[in-house]
Image (cartoon, rainbow, N blue to C red; front, side, top):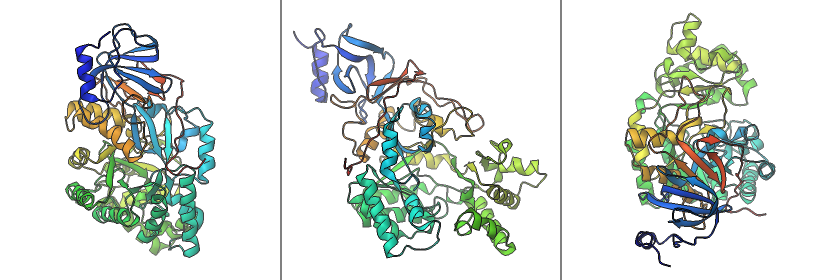
Length: 532
């Protein structure tokens, strides 16, 4: 029995697949039939069938008209891709939403959690508890610098002494041995903002010695952006650790256009042997705590200390001046209409409104100074979060085109009715495919898929994930390239994306003909230094 000419040519060109005759093929648990297969490595898609047994890809090639399988997925007109890997996810609500529907319906099969220096402690027991949950997608975790620093030093605005530094290094070492993939920092947030670069370098060395990576919410993404990028590069150089400039962006009107400089810095560092990469979400607005507008010094020691300072007239005036400065030059976008309140637990009627809307509701002139007073009021009421419309599309597209840029949502697991999310929580990956590939043609489809699959898989050294190859894990996303798009918006955010037709997580069908089901195939993945 002979192979067809087309199958032989395919096998010879690719040299990667198991190629069998059309007739007499063995039975498979699942066959994906008639799709355009993209391996995730940046090359063009090609027509092929895929046979899956248990959690493993067993065959890629032609299986004829009547493949033997327990289940057949008709992928005619669809693209068959490796499952998407999200390099930046806030997984805090995982016990509330273990099925991770808001992410899986985007085609995500693996998420990297505990970014921005956040996370949990103790590390290993938390992963162990998750391992007993039924998970909708695979989860990997970083250990957070801010969390470790808070455990050892509280919210103190000072350098660690020798014993404290050694304790933090030991905690990083422990986390790596318990399964962390590296260390994350949030140097814009507390208490990470109180740390000096030397401290971060020492902790990053502990991660590097265990095969980990370093991801950083930079110390500044506005006026201090270039210095923030340089600091991250220097940490990578001195700690000899692969780094990711996470959710890389340019914030604030005075800095728009600076991505030309930051990307040049990345290229220069890479030419010098420093392993620098980027992840990015495809939106021109960020989302974070309302406190990002407030000077860090005023929040040292925690909320109680902040309240005391706000009651001191001189300190209060300084705090308000600092907030006004940030509204004009940083996340405020020089216009309080650009700050859209999101999570406001002390007054849910404000969710979705801008600072300008709030000012007008209070019969105040919508000035930066009055906006600052409202921000202070919000923080004193317990804080909250906001969407900051302070980025520029040209920077976004330039960063997306860079060959070292991966896709990361910076999303949080959510569900309809849960607060006021950023649209990226529901739509990051479909938005790239629908808006930036199909409609705007900023990047082509093979490039986009590489940024979502093999590039992050290689960054995390995931081995048999992130590519469609025989012997690799069957994390697979199948989508309609003509209809895939995000549906969540800033004013109406609670909508799942469309166009993701099938998702398999470790060979378990989790999205079937566009419908999410209760199947949970996800696992906890452990990092390179994991010791059982």
